[in-house]
Length: 87
Image 1 (cartoon, helix red, strand yellow):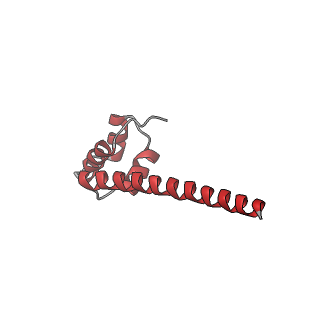
Image 2 (cartoon, helix red, strand yellow; image 1 turned 90 degrees about the vertical axis):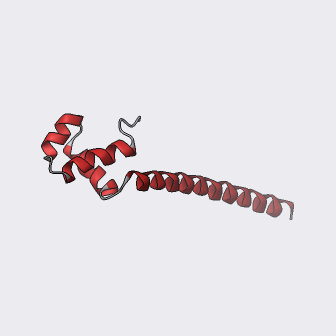
């Protein structure tokens, strides 16, 4: 599923509410549901754009590290299986 809004855009939208704009006006203007707005607020509320970029980098790094651990675990199990079979 393609995202319609980048993290930086979401933070700008959330700032509108902090400046006093009503949630109903915001969701109508940007064509998102209130549920989506409040999900964004729980994830990005109080963040600055630099914080969102850092969060994105950390999430990417975490994803890569999880993949690396999965690959190494698979290699480890494969090697153990080969050793047991040759014994």
